[in-house]
Amino acid sequence: MNFNKLIVVFSLVIMALGLAPKAHAAEEAAQAGEEKKGFNATEVIFGHIADSHEWHLFDLNGSPVAFPLPVVVYGANGLQVFSAGHFEEWHESEDGKLQISNSYNGMHLEKGMKEKLVADDGSSIYDLSLTKNVVSMIIGVILLLWVMTSAAKKYKAKGSMTAPSGMQNGLEAVIIFMRDEVARPNLGHKANKFMPLILTIFFFIWINNLLGLLPGGANFTGNIAVTCCLAIVSFIVMLFNSNKHFWSHLLNPPNVPFPINILLVIIELLSLLIKPIALMIRLFANMLAGHIVILSVISMIFIFGALNKFVGIGFVPVSLAFSVFMFMLELLVAAIQAFIFANLTAVFLGQAIEEGHGHENEIIA
Amino acid sequence: MDLLTPELGLFFWTLIAFLAVFFILRKFAWKPILETLGEREKGIADAVSAAERVKAEMSQLQAENEKIMAEAREESSRLMKEARETRDRIVNEAKDQAKTEANKILVDAQQQIQQQKMAALAEVKNEIGNLAVEVAEKILHTQLSAADAQNHFAEMLAQDIKLN
Image (cartoon, rainbow over all chains, first blue to last red; front, side, top):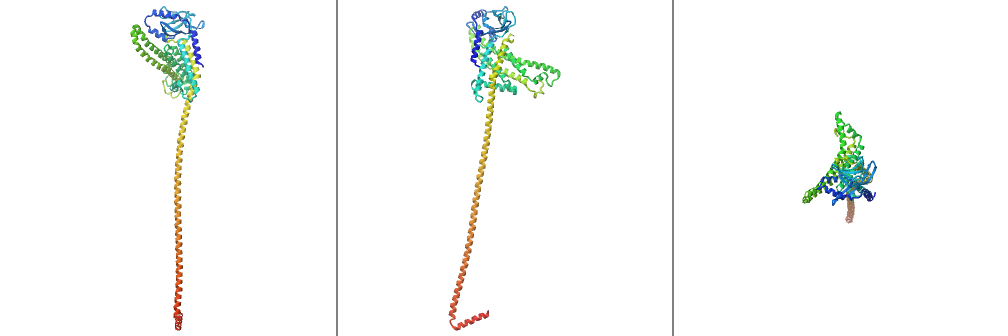
């Protein structure tokens, strides 16, 4: 596969679909500037962590520098694809909680805590837009595919008995770590079968975590739809691979009197469902919290700056030191959360495929 | 709670992208990488075990060599000892033989000396006898030159015969 070509095609598609007149931006920003004196940290932070139909990089002279992204929507009129740049005029809703855009193709955007595409007539539409998060993910995916396939090529080219070098070397350490510390202890002799899944989960989450940390990056892994999707994938894999022993243990715990049996089965079923939910919430909350903390620390400069210019400038070193520390921490968290997700997937899978041996005396699993 | 409600679009794209990544990487990355890693580990393990085997063989060889050396040393000392013994035996035999030979020669010599001594003695005796006879003859010759002496002597002889 030629990834350079792929990237070019990808960016062309995004541009063709997305790029549209942005003249409105200056006016909009000017209006916003008039309306809101001071600095609204909540709005800034939630504007950053929420998904959006445009990729907002920064404001220049009061006008936002942003790429509108393609809107893909499935509704009563079938599948429609157009640029989000068509939503260019915003006004406030009557209760003042929402920002509402102009109507285009019978639909408009509503921006509260989140940005929503709503049909004007209230009919249900399915918003499949290539939002900021989706585009960020696609970049992550391309990076991932490029890195991994080039490493794999190196392996093929150099053969098995040559020492790894460069990126291949770093990857190999991670891959071997995942195999020896995650897959094998949990999955035993079936480790090889599930290694691709565990590695994909780990690297997919890791690279997207890291991309999210870049300035201007999207909060992809801190979005519950994403973690939900990943958790469901790992849950489904777990269910499809669970064996008889797992279910018999779950639905008919051995060595337990009948009434407690019922209670146990209920608890076990709940715990089965809680597993993917825990996976989902953990990654979501960790990444979201990291983003919020970093943004809050940065926002402090502007909050103090709004009070007094010199206080704001005085607070810069503190805030920067803090955010550098947080970035370091988040770099760790990015890897740790990816590892934990992969590891817990392996643990749950391991429980599901465990063969019955030596557990007869265990009352509560 | 807005943050906690998953959006369909993002969910959909994430699912598609994740599955695509999974299948692509499984085929084009994880499989070759993991296979190569497995191969390499096997190769290293083989190499290590081969090295161990060679080491064991080497030490065995060395032990064998030492054994052979020891045997050779033992053999040579045995040979030396045997040679010494043989030499001593030969020398002793030679000595004994020489001694017996010498003794025999000595005995022969003594016998010969004895014989010659006896022969000499016998000759001397004969000579002495002859001389005595000669002397007696001369004496007799002189004494019996007179006639009465001859008679007297004949008488004396006759008497001797009679007495006998």
